[in-house]
Length: 114
Length: 111
Image (tube, rainbow over all chains, first blue to last red; front, side, top):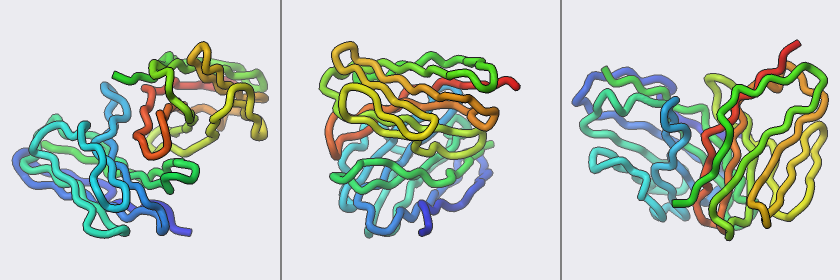
């Protein structure tokens, strides 16, 4: 059984460029979460979807960040324009809400903005 | 602001001893609690979840929940060097609500 799949695993870009992170949740899961992790701030929830609908985006830092979930098997997190302070590891997680709610994390995307 | 608090550590425990990790939460209405383990450079992985007051055991791991005192703990018996990692505590108010993570406790098992 494939776990949560994220791509790319590493991304290095220059300030001002657009960055798109991708996630494929576990098949059958109905909730998807985007997190950001840094040493200073720990693990922060950015946004989560239930049945492809955004439920809570209060953690999205600012308008430069946007997320979409066009179908049950794919989600994107976009940063435009990127800034050095966006450098972090971005995790996608999925769960079967209403069952155990246990979240399964993908391997993460390490983003470096120069 | 709902919060989950953990001592950042590092907590150093000799091999074979019991490691005790603690966590408190601010939202008295929280219903579900999770412990995740995260190795350096890896993603968090679930160790245990607990919903009811009392103890829940799984192998060398025991989760303890005390809703009246609003704390959750994780005991690791017969600690092994492979248990060295950061342990994240998380709380959830209700099914379908977001899970709030603590900042994690770094555990080091010394041989």
